[in-house]
Length: 174
Image (cartoon, rainbow, N blue to C red; front, side):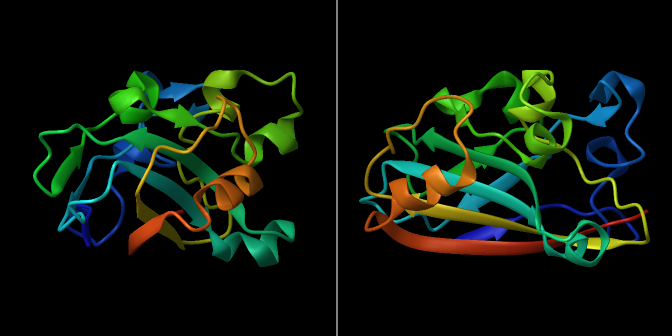
């Protein structure tokens, strides 16, 4: 399985999806417009994809890897081994997407805005450029998850169902 994300001319995640996003791409000051990506060579037996977008460079800053996005989505039957996940898929809840809490849910508390805490949460590195890791897992079935699940629920729900995994490391500027 292959994963492609277009970066800007400097090799960073485009500003529209990160720290320097315009106000129209933000909710409560947080970038919430997810970037598009293309998944190819999806196994024919796959019925769903699981997504995790994580910042491991946040560990020295806040003491843990920051979870920016977790989701599961159903593959369309006519996919033919490819899925283009469109820009803003998180807010559009494309492909019947079920999304989990990101680290903002814990940092801002459960009473935080679900549009921020249960959706794509764009990179905002405070101390210099960070590299963010996007994982996409092809699954043999759509996991049974409820909107706002915690990341550990996704880990356990996909166990034994992963057919293939792709990974992309995406730098974002400070």
